[in-house]
Length: 226
Image (cartoon, rainbow, N blue to C red; front, side, top):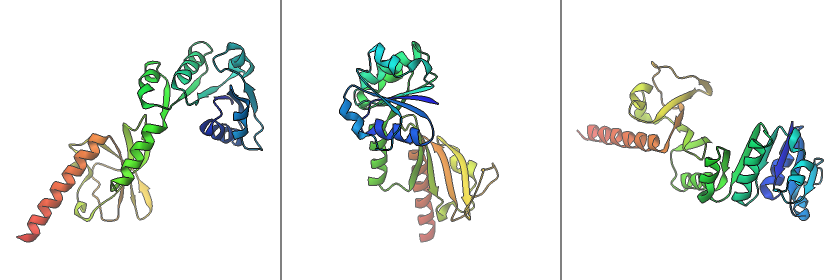
């Protein structure tokens, strides 16, 4: 595929190199020639120096033949405009934009662009690690609004059915791993200690699941004292 990467900073250079390594034809655009020094020495794609909003620069990058374009400069307004032009004027099939400052994310979304917000995602992931959440996020969609989480099934869930556990939460079972083998969950499946449950969920769903678990633990503890 013919791919254009706009911006050759840390993100752009790594992206361009990864695409090149997988066999794509890559063109990297940046207004500063020294930025191309971020590319590994064995990168064999093309580089185009010039202002990324300049029509001639985009032509030299081959935007008319591009199958995809990624705008990954640290300047959100430039990313938004370049991506919007690529999609609406040149009809590039796949356009992805980097969101640097979360305050600008609404602009990218207003243009209907596919957005990767590393700042928002990074903050969410660090929060998970700091709070030592028992759920481990293995995939997040959008800006983290929907996640696929990995959850080790606790002893207290033994014999409980999936519909019973997830009836009142924004959670959907994706898979259950048992003895190292993953299976698709069924409505009549009951959980066993040692199972690993994969859930598609929102933050509200996780909060509801944690509240349910805390209540279940409290009931179990009270029953043991009687």
